[in-house]
Amino acid sequence: MSAATRTASASAQVDWSKIYTGLGLGKQTITSLQEFRARHTTALNRNSALKATTPEIDLSHYKGLLKDQSAVQNAEKVLREFKAVDYDVTKFNSAVDAFKGKAVEAAKATLKKIETEEGSLKDTLANIQEARPFEDLTVTEVAKARPEISKAVETMIQKGKWTVPGYREKFGEFSLM
Image 1 (cartoon, rainbow, N blue to C red):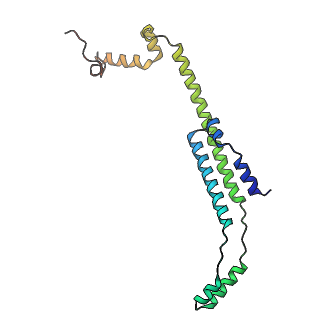
Image 2: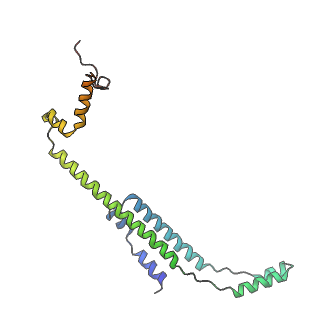
Image 3: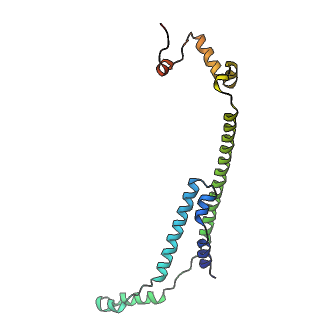
């Protein structure tokens, strides 16, 4: 079995929908995979199309058409001596491996970020579930939890400000006089 056949059969066995949905990949990773899959399919289609078409050049037509017969003879010679060249793709494989390494690093970083966010969200959810109702909180507990509120109130008192900026605009005037 040739390398191309092994690659084609291996890529046909990949369950892409399971990869997209089952692994919990990020949007960027899924997009990269879809782009890779599209490029791979396009390359396979182009390759098979090129293998299926072999150009046939009728040089006898050009012998009767062109005055310069040496050009036609030169073309015949070039076509007879033409040999397809095989390219060493190992340098391209190293580029693919480098891309693969970057993709894996990005996936690991995304996983780490998601795990951190998940832990933070679980802590927040636990705090919400364990929290007492707002009515049961005391000023001391609020000041302990958010010391910047106490500092802001102290600053307002020192400056002689007894109203909260924006309060009247938001809640209206409740004074009896």
